Every structure is written in structure tokens, then in C-alpha cells.
Image 1 (cartoon, rainbow, N blue to C red):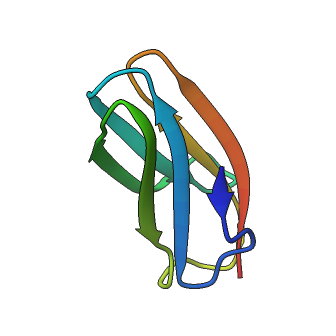
Image 2: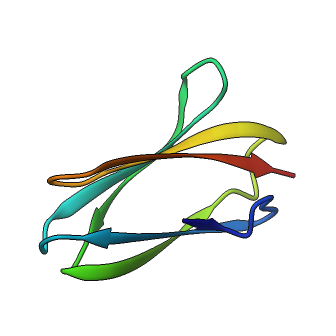
Length: 79
């Protein structure tokens, strides 16, 4: 999950991890260009990570969370 959606300054990404391992959180624009890429050290269970989107152009983006066993995609709007 990602909230708030639409986001203005910060976007909180909430995801569950099966183990304590690094996860890659990426935000891509509609052309597929990576706008933000951050490696997050996760713990087993629920994890929350905040992305600063205040300097990102308004538009529709694809949020990807890649962890050891999971690849999640979600459409988000930056306003």
C-alpha cells in the first residue's frame, strides 16, 4: 500500500516482508524511467518507508517494491 495517494510531499510505502532482507523501492514515470530508487533494510513483517516526492513532477507513476520473494507494483499520483 502507498499513502496518501495522491501524494504531495511524502509518500509512505507499507509492505510486508517474509524475512529481514534488503528491499528495493523504485518509482518510475510513465516512460519507465527510474525517478527514485532506494534500498530499504526491512525486518520480518510489516515495514513502512517514506519517500520524499516534493521535487518530483506532477503525474502518474508506478511504484515497485522488490524484496526477496515479492514483487509488488502500484500506481500512484504525485500532485
